Length: 592
Image (cartoon, rainbow, N blue to C red):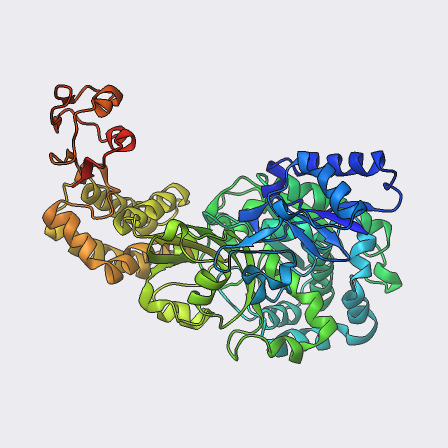
């Protein structure tokens, strides 16, 4: 029997180490520590309900576990064979407890390929990876397929880059293979910078050997002897586990000199990023690794022709690499049958925002937004109304209710006015102001722009200033035309993908929520109550009983009135903190 304890960053921050320790202590006190093993794994995905403990082989799934629950798990479940009811997941729709994760709506529609080992194995134990077909694909490539058949397999699979651009992986490999050079390089882009995104980090934390194996396969296919993982320094747990995995792979002869006795040499080194979003763009990433400023350059030449140190270089992101060993083992046709014709396989998303089941999910391409948000995600929190979902991070767009039945793939999302991106998916409800949302993403883009080209450096700053002006209640009708025209210019003239896609949140929100922009500008109102300068608190006379609670809580003494008399708010003094609404028990305060 095994007790699997979630060990991703989220649960790591929630004292998962204390849970594992408490379980071990409880087992020792019961004399079961030699019979039952406690294993710290990677992320289970169901972050909303973490920390998670899974009992094998009966597949019992315990949620929101705390260290003090260890003893009852051991005493009740392990010794007496009774499930601990209070720790089981409760289905909000059926109002029943579910012990098997396979029966939970969160997991039912998922197919885990890139995440196949996350939450299943100990990521710091190479033997557990090998036990699940680990490094078999590498052996097959080195001993049977060779470089050309390997590249052909990748092309036939239809795998497209999961880092945002969606370029065919096999074609990218073929370009690097064809370009002759004395040196070639493989680069893993682990510089995940989108707000709300944690896909690549979770794969590296939960299954680092899959990326190492895939990079080695990539190296053999193109004739490279060195791989580089460009990872942000803010991912300490991923770095720790990746380093350990590299040491183990070298010890087993799966990395370094004469890999698997094949005569092929391949090593992997780490390079650390400082959290610059623009370094997710492959040319900026390469420059950063070379010790230069993280700025993009005009393509062509593409990295497959002239990349790191001017040599042919393949750059793929973590999720792309995680798919490769499975494709080699199970075949291109198997992978191509998942998803649809132009977007094969699955896609990992970090589902976040105003959704009940926040977490990491992996679904077949072609799954609709409605299925993701309402079936897997469990719908909108607190029974609020769905308003929009931002896909693709700062480079994507906000999609609305009319897009809910859109199948998720590269082409459909672009057609709808957004993009796949690396997989961030942030859900919004009726309380979100879409003008403020666009401003939030522009603020991020302005901060992260490398400043190399004028359209991005200056243009996005102007876009942000106009949006700020509108949310402050100072917008004018001509500002709306300026937003549209400037967005168009920035998209057409920026140097790299960051600038070319940065106006997308503005363009998509103006397209889908035009009435909100007009309301902000013409009526000086924010219906969502998000823009402070466009709202005011008022006391409803017929509801006010004169209890004075609001006046006592007001930090600026702007509320006047005698006991048992109707109170009033001085709008000139009010700082719109909302304290009066929070403390009123009679629903006598409203926002106008």
